[in-house]
Length: 276
Image 1 (spheres, rainbow, N blue to C red):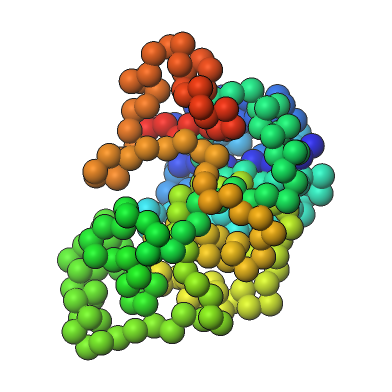
Image 2: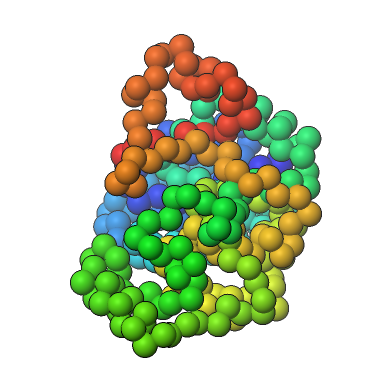
């Protein structure tokens, strides 16, 4: 057993069950986080449906919303459970119930076994990425964001405007250099353990709680403190349109292409993040 799956699930539970069974059939333990917004009946039915799989765990549920801290908190808790309960795991792969394996899981296991000290996480500074929007590149790390961008957009915009007007700037703790990237990563046990057991974790957690979209910067930043070798890319294939919506790659691809992993050049891709 070398790869453990942390799976974040909030919808499409029939699909999530199928994907979970696909991972489990190749010997991958799975730790699930199910959004607290999901009704108790739906959650309990999902737990019962997977009760026959031995190497699965469910963690305390957080109410997760796009761009908010609870996505990080959910991932932290699931990752801690994975590291504690499955000591044989050497890489932890963060996925969702909408992430569909494109190639045989054993190929991923073999690929990672050949790279035991490599972390796969997109991790770049704001100066290195062209895809930040709304003028919030470095400011996402120096302003505070207590309001939901989706549910309370007016307050979000007004509070940003106020902070700019008064010249407010947050201090970035302990000289860390903020990095950004895809939420979906695959980290070694060593790097992930170091992040979760960092003696300054409370300082970092308090700071990232008010960063904008912290699930795309928390692990991306802190992995830079501990990783022996980072490949700054995700093994999860995802494409987004100008609205930030997942592109329908599988639907647009011919069947033969999808059968071999979508693209011949992407021999090491593990999964494709599909739209719901």
